[in-house]
Image 1 (cartoon, rainbow, N blue to C red):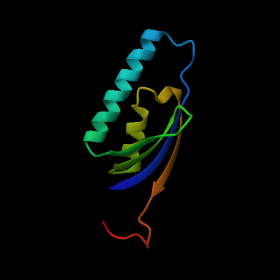
Image 2 (cartoon, one colour):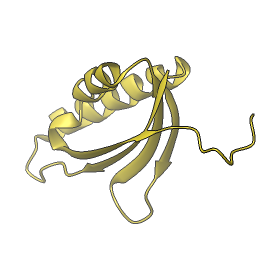
Image 3 (cartoon, rainbow, N blue to C red):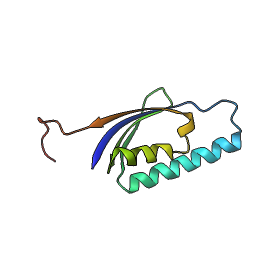
Image 4 (cartoon, rainbow, N blue to C red):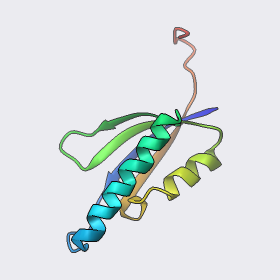
Length: 94
């Protein structure tokens, strides 16, 4: 398994059709919650004061993370920053 820190900054166009916006947000929520239930989207935190989140993914490979991110319904409206993670030598085993 490979762990990744992912920051997602969302910028939905103000002129996006309201029905499309509602549908896209509902699909995004369902997709992300399904990934959380699968244990792939391990943590998600909101960045205070921004339409952004910091998330931790635990996936098989960078390719799997790429597919997950590209399939996010909001992906077209995101700026995404991915940082691969590895165990720190001073970490206490869990």
